Length: 225
Image: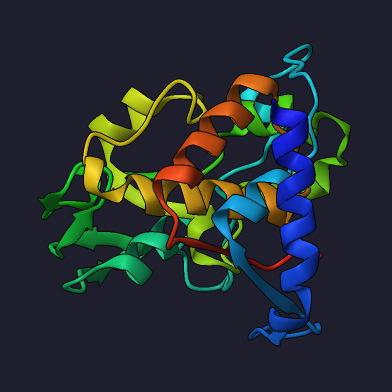
């Protein structure tokens, strides 16, 4: 069934290709292209492969690093929270954040303390390892774990929702705010496509079902360098 759906979706993607022209994305030192496809087509661009957890350690992904400006004292986590703040916090010495206001879209909650938030890897580090990152260099894993170039890669959410998610894929966990299921699924697919990660059979089945339930949703991704 999945095989037939994948063939049909790929055919649809090819038919749509002339209409989906890559557009320049903002990048500081390199040319980049952004692709947008219907979710039903993009989900089936994910390579099918079994997941392998052998050898995984969280420390295989160096995070959080010094972020985009190594001289300001703000690491990647702090930079995500500063970028996503609805009301900007005060930045104290050592990049300690005081005050501020954030919207945790996973569980539809307002948060007013940086310590109440986690910065979630849209595709968790363990899932990335299982899906191909085990074959990457240490430098590429660090780039993945600190990906500030596109928004969906890292997202500030409540610590409770992030820890509920843990390393689960969409076949095992979805955000409790059900109204954002389409957005979450699209951002998951976009992250996997950006980094060339694979998906296993249960994951593909779940993503296919969500794509059918979200017919108007598109997936936008920029391949990682």
